[in-house]
Image (cartoon, rainbow, N blue to C red; front, side, top):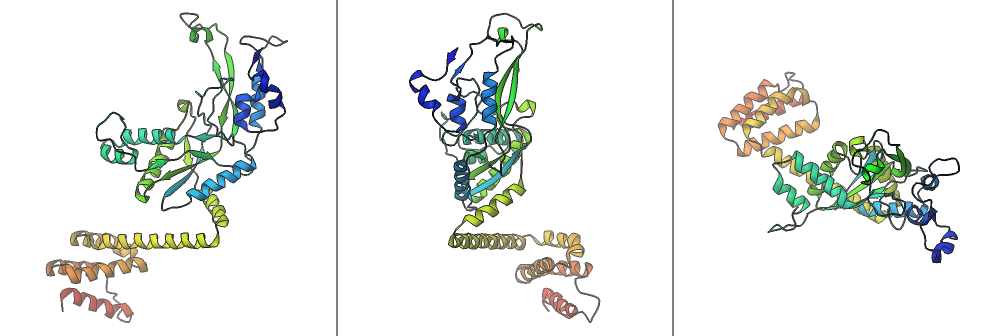
Length: 377
């Protein structure tokens, strides 16, 4: 029998009513059978498996749910953060190499015992995917992720921060699920024999895997974090994260429905003054984006605008927003274009029936006058 807890604290530990899964995983099993021991029926001892099964039954505590809500509220600021709720397609094995008496690792938060994905792992996965699929963007990626080689001269710091991903508590869902890895050639792996043999008996080893969804938060300037958010989604969907990705573990997809639910709940928790401030900021940002888009449209060269009118006008002419864009193009042409380009625009507008044929239509006379303005009449 191997003691996993010192005799001096064993009594006090047994009296504890803590249900922290991290503490239970590391210290909850007080003793274990020595390697190779059998039970009374000649089968491998299942004490460890039973202990892990007890951990799997544990839900997220109320303390963790409150902490998660505080973290979500803190990162629920589109001026500095992006949030992504990513759902596991299968399971996740993360932190297997962590030291533990049970030789069963899992990345668990110290305070709450819930699974998390370290920010360094998230950053590494995203950077690896971006480096492979965007080979011509090395300089831009270095600005986002920082210098890869710490010994390199002229090193730069990353412009974005990848925070730890928190497991998302949803109702009564439980984070853990019992998994198994089977060792087929233990003596070979231990160096006792030179070659593995098909006659070796497989030895099942139970461990903790994670299920459910995670909240990923990236911090930085709005443009950079939006790009990193897109890279994150592609990396997790294409490469996965954690161990055994070749077996289908660790792959995730964005859950927009869950994101919407979390944001609605967060809005309800906000004080009225903060809610109004954020709504005003969002409206201001939307207006700025609209103005930037309008400026970009007006900056297009005459040939491009005429080409877009020929291909898009007939299918979009009934939309008020599109007609406003056309009128802005005409205003820009009147003020800035040469007479030759304006004549080409007039011909294009006639071709796409900019002026209604029905003379009783109120726009008939108005648009005729617009064409006259384009000609300089």
